[in-house]
Image 1 (cartoon, rainbow, N blue to C red):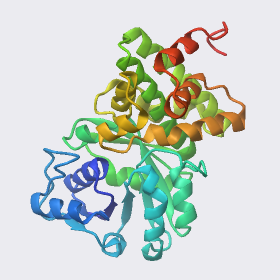
Image 2: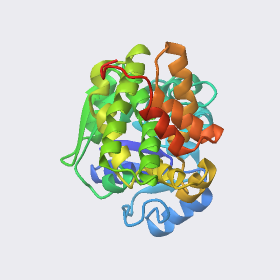
Image 3: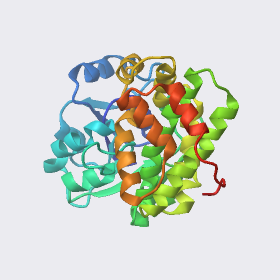
Length: 331
């Protein structure tokens, strides 16, 4: 049995806390939001973001970051990506040397264009970071639906430690030595999922969705390899696997927001209606930055940015994608 601190009590943090407790580990859950912790203490259920998933009676809930972090075998950082830097900064003085922090959110920072593991290392230089991601919805993990995911670190020993802690008969964990590629895939697929949702909102069909997923992974892999990721990563669970589940499921906040945008709502209106962080909106500008930096054309992501930030009509964006210059598929 390990002692685990989960930092973040949203849907994903709660689902992973439940999974880890089911695996026999002693789990503490932290949130900076007092009302959220009060709810968890009273009901042992994240009633707002993960209703129906009951947490064990002996799970600890706290607003004290020190209590959540100190003397833990492993920490799971599960706050939404826009809050990663601030949360990591609040943890740094209580994180011990060599502490493993598992980064489970997905996204790229707006201004610095850093991945989340880069942010964590900048704020907490004494820690070791492992990335955990793949095609996973909190709603299903919380219910024990069979799931496969990847633990990634440049040090495979650390990835294997995380693999051992999370692995179960309904939660299969693979390892990877390409955390950077994993994080790029996990962030960029959210932007493509917005495009898939926009197409759904416009009333288009399976043909359109298949084209967006296929051309979307082509864009992600091309950029990811140019930036230093490994092609196998984008052909695996954290690439095409994560893209499929995010583009196809109504559990996906990015797809749901995209549907609303396709139906005529603004990005702000869509995010307000979804009522959760829509990571793709926060990663879209960073994706264009990476595309320009590495000279990689990313037409789908470019059009999503025009819709989100420059008021382009979704119908016009789809038309412009369809009428681009003729070219071979592999280019």
